[in-house]
Each structure stands twice: as C-alpha cells, then as structure tokens.
Length: 364
Image 1: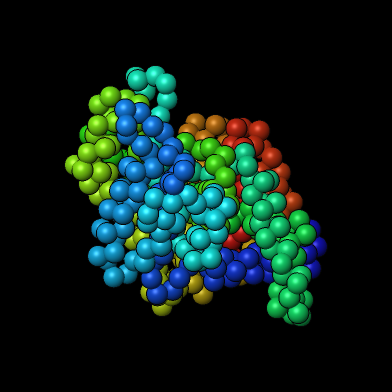
Image 2: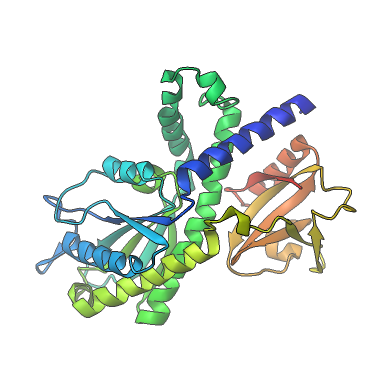
C-alpha cells in the first residue's frame, strides 16, 4: 500500500475514534442505559401468573437505585413503567444519550420445566455486515449537512476504508461487552449461588443497533418451578440487582476514565516471545528507535485470563504478543510494518479458526 494510502487510512481511523469518543463517551459521568425488556401489551415469557415484563422492570429499577447512589454514574431508562417500547426506540434512546454502556434485562421461558440458569449475551459477529449497514445508513445523514466535506474530512459512509474502521471499533466494543458479561455471570454464581449457562454471542438486533458496548441478560427461566419463584421474590430481585450493579461498577472502573489528564502518557506494551519471557517496551523512551514507526498486528482473542504465549495455546501460531488493558488481556499475532503483510497474517489466523480476528494499528 503506498505511503499516501497509509496516511489516508490512519487519518480515517483517527477520525472514527474521535467520533466514537465524542459520541459514546461522556467526559463527566459514566452513562448507563438500563433496558427492561418487553412491557405493556407485550408480557414476554409467562408461566404460573409470573410475567417477564414485571420481573425485569422491578430488577432494572433496583439496579438503577443502587447505581444512582454513585454520583459518578448517570442512569437512563428505556422504560420505568409498564409500557411497550419498540426495539428501534430502545436503541435510539441509548444512542441519543451518547451512553457508555447498554444493559438489557430479560427472563427466559420455555415449554420444558427442566430448563434453568442465567445467561448473558453479547453482539454476535455473524451480524457484523448488518451492523455496518446500519452504521452506513445512519451516517448517511452527513450528506444532508452543509459543508459536510469540511466538517467530516476523510469520513465517507460509502468508503470501504471507513467501514473497516467501524468494524475495528465494533470489535473493541465486543471485547468490552464480553468482559462485562463474564463479570455478571461470575457474580450470579459466586454471590447468589445461581447456575450459569455462560456468556454467548448471538445476533440480537438491539445490541447490534446500539453504538456502544452492551449486554442482554437472561435472569433465569420463569418456566422452572423453583427458579420462577426465586425470580418473582423480592429476595431474588435484590440479589440479582446487586450482582449486576457490582459488575457495572467494576466495568466502569476498568474501562472508563472521565479525566483525560489521568491517562498515562507513556504507552507500555507488553511483548512476549515464544518462550513466554515478557518484556516491557516504553514507547515514550527517546532511545526507542521504533517509537515513530507504524506497526500492524492481528488481534485474535481477548479475555481476563493470562495465557502463556506458546504456539500450543494459540493453535500453532507463533509470534504471539499481548497487552494488558486494565483487567483485559488482548492477544496479537504478528508484528508487521507493512499492511499487506499483516493482511496475510490475518488470513492465516482465520484459517486456524480465529474467524473474528482483525488488524490493529500501533503507533508510538
């Protein structure tokens, strides 16, 4: 790729991150949208007189009450009463609020009375193209503004490079969503003694349509005799609300920094060789000759668990490095100065089974 295209590509990515920070991050308070599923004429799952819409509303209001005691957190509700709100409007509420996090609360219900347990869903990457279509459509309003070329230099909703940037941001949101979902499920098990069905990726429209990290929580099965009673009890609702609230606060502490001045101006990248010997590279070091060079790596996975970077742990791939961002470990394959070479690494990673892998740019 010519140097001119490198510059253009990086400019687009930087602009996209600027848009995302301005749109999705409030710099004074951490904004959480709490979405109680169903409502009004839509009762959701119903069994033995227990209605999903009532349980989730009670839980959401309890979560909100707990979080509102924290002066650094602002709560936005999609509904606070028994009314029906369409999926599109729920997403619009979150997007217009420029929220930092979207949490949708639901209950399960099936014909079988044996099914039980909690589960938390994050955006399914199988819907990435649909999500990008939504972003492209919504961003199309730019063309209706006067002097849009000057206002949004380099940003073209019809440009494949722009959409690539959006996909990178989506992947970042997915990492953070998985982190929150994992914490929620962990709290359900350790704090409340619940049975967890785990964290799952699923193409859920309301998660795809919100431009921020988000999760959809299934609190349990109203169709299960014991679990249904627990969900409908005040004790159960209090425990559930507390566990979710704690996870949200933990997420805020891990990923939200309201004061840019608090950020460490020195970028410390932890790099490991195949023998798992980590070393820290301080890119603010004036002696670091590579500090002004752009590098490309393939992000293949992320999680809270630290994994030795030997090939056997990464489906035979070598040249594995990682970075720790708060409590999240991000694992990368390759370290290229040429974008096209990194694209080959991306193809290799996908052939190994890392189908959601994507390219990340490092500068300084």
